[in-house]
Image 1 (spheres, rainbow, N blue to C red):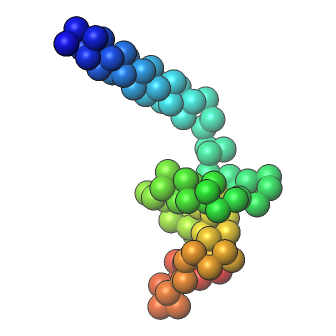
Image 2 (cartoon, rainbow, N blue to C red):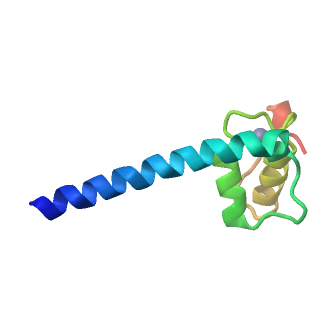
Length: 88
Ligand SMILES: [Zn+2]
């Protein structure tokens, strides 16, 4: 039973460290995190970006717009023509 608690404590520490590092990276990257990518996204990257930028509008966030375009081009998303903020 003691080893289970050790594993849980270890996982908790890893999550805490990841949270601290993540918040530090957010601060150091500044507004660049919403810039368009240097190269087109892969499908997996596009899905990750769409999730991490779920609070952004594609009109305002170049990164989310690039991810959205990648998913549309791959046939993973069919844009709703009535939703003007997702028009390409
Ligand atoms: Zn964004």
